Amino acid sequence: MEQPEVLLQIAAQSQFEIYPGVAQQKGYPGIRAQAPEDYSQVLTEFLEPVMRQFFAIPEELGLRKSICAFSLTTTPAAELGPLQRTPHFDASTPHHMAVLLYLCDEKHGGTGFYRHNTTGLQQINADNREHYLDVYYEEINARRPAQRYFDDSSAEFTFLGMIPAKFNRLVIYHGSLLHSACINPAISLSSNPLQGRLTLNSFFDF
Image (cartoon, rainbow, N blue to C red):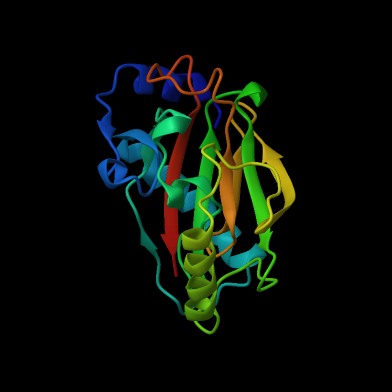
């Protein structure tokens, strides 16, 4: 964005609410606030042709988009549920795209990507989804994940790499990839947009 500081100031004045699922220890472990509608419109106009070109999305497929939301990670590691302590995928559809704008800097970690060791899967689709989930739930029930924000490898997942946070960096990736927010809990768990791990999240599906 040409003036990302403006978004930062808007976030600082926004009313954040707890993400759905936090009480059940599922989903994004933090709070969110709706982003300005003009940001959503500009983002869509800019990114739609980019995503169609670089991710080979057929032109005949229509576009559906979620609400753009400022997001802050706020849940202490000790309060994370089992599903929040492992990599996850957002959707198993082939053209579901996650778009993440970092409004924080490198000290707040980044986004990590993983391979599931037992199945060898890095990406979940309609053909392998049920098998992956069967194995995943069997593993998670047999041995609870460590009580921490997931980042490095474990017995179940291999860390493949990370896109580091950088202020005003925009990241686009398939929501079907196994991924996790890499978080520094010592400094990143703050409800203050000017201090915490602030991102602007959007999802596109074609």
